[in-house]
Length: 434
Image 1: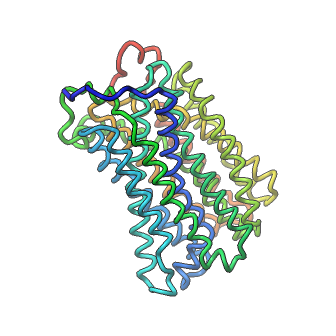
Image 2: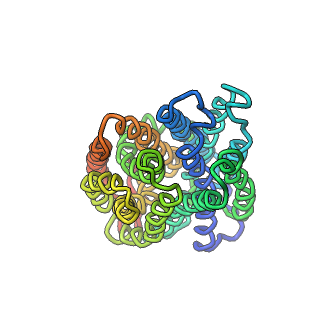
Image 3: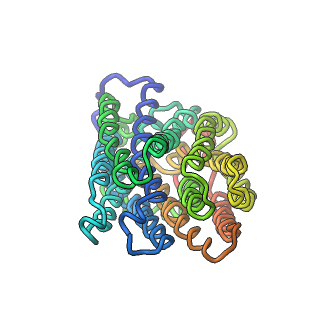
């Protein structure tokens, strides 16, 4: 058994705040790349491509970060299951922060030729590797400290982090866009948000320096020797189901926050600032409602909310693309808002749901791998597929709506096959494994 001597356990509010701040910083790093990919990386790093091909290439480098995330969840999941959740938080933050700052220093294609996109690809891979470990460490440290009947509420704080990270990233880009000319933004302004990641990483490390190890990890008699092997052998079906279940959440989020930004600015002629304000407004509502929905998950269960969110997503995808195609700010905002409400109905409870599905000895690996594989299916592919589908259709991208509806139905089926982890049962004992 691990040595259970620790420093005084922090208050749940303090621990949740530190987890929230860390995930906000790491997702800032991840999202600022997505915004840059939608706005400037195509012409700067793929200038020999047509505008559409350049955007597709930039989104492909964006997608590499998602491919790396499951690998990061394996690497950091091994660390978390063998040596504790706390070391994961420090190592993942350092890796993501350093690689993000480095993106801001990469010369463009005009300066170093083909080495520029290759460096971009490598650094994006390292970003994804770090983020793949961040979610599992932050969520588990919060969940495993929390009282069983309030796991949904406390674990929702790290889930607010992505919204804050997105708002911070896009707020910085919006500020630069309104104060710099297009030429200045393309020349050096786009680099500033990446450089700012270094300062944010230092703040995150300071906030996390006093966190204590998870009590559930300290109670494990014998940690798994090779956590991934146990997950593949004993929980492979659970991993695949959770990946499929979560794919619509990722698809929605990156349709709204990344693909729609490129589509509206390039195809509809909507101003960059207008689009960022519409998207950010919907994300503010999403972040604000996360703890509220999580409380409902503690009261009524995780699975019912996930099923409702998937059904709502399937019904809303065609209205979403129709409202987006109008190019009218208010209508686009309404489309984004409906999508984000469906998204948060699922993802507000995921941070409690996934860990409860796995036994503690392989929880860091299992939950993180399932979560990040969902990112590959939904987040990496969606901007690429959506951009390609737009080229085949008219002004209203109905093909994108059909694709997203199909993903929503896939996720609905996967959630239907997953068990409930009822809060009442969790009070008495650790939930059953997958």
